[in-house]
Figure 1 (cartoon, rainbow, N blue to C red):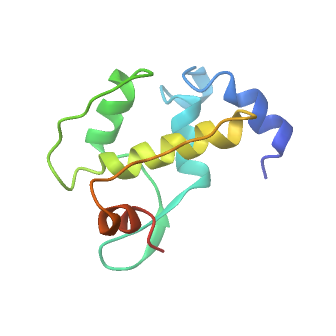
Figure 2: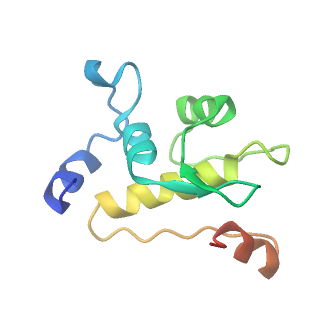
Length: 110
């Protein structure tokens, strides 16, 4: 299990791609190792990045505007990205905004 000190050290290197991770970033490793998602069928499964999410990860930076089609998993990936950034960097506050209350609640529905 990852401890807090290790997570904080990894937080300074989230975009690094160590050889032992086979081309994945430390961020992607943490997302896939620590996070789970609820599928459309209601099952809880590990979050494994799909092609659209991997493309976004490879291209995004600190400020991003995403014009997106629905159902590609970008909202899920951004929530995961924010979560990993928040738990690995002391004093970080993350906010994810939706266009209405129902949509905001759906993002985090368990």
